[in-house]
Image 1 (cartoon, rainbow, N blue to C red):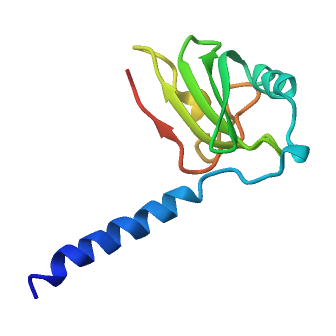
Image 2: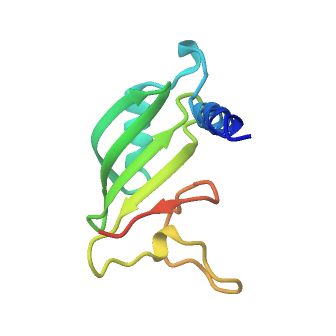
Image 3: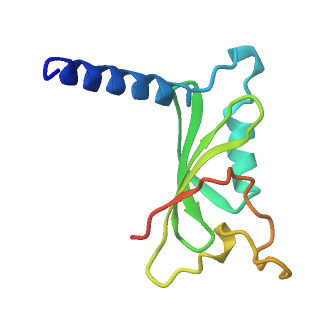
Length: 124
């Protein structure tokens, strides 16, 4: 029994690694939007691009929002959908722009980001 435990751990770790690998973008380059289009798309949402690179077949944008918070986006190269969003808030920053409005209340911010329900935010 004790000999099977390390094998089970290796199998579990291997399976979890393959699940994470599915986060890659898999569109042919012919379907990709240009870098200029991505930069304009992000700028229209109030984010100044500091760095744009390609990683795992997706565009990754690092920049700042209008409040000076650090933003990192993972963007689908074909549809320009935001796949991941990470915000590092400045001390005392207003987080309302990145949170869904409460029921029965209108949102405060202008153009909201279209992000998946699981948004990772880390205060700093």
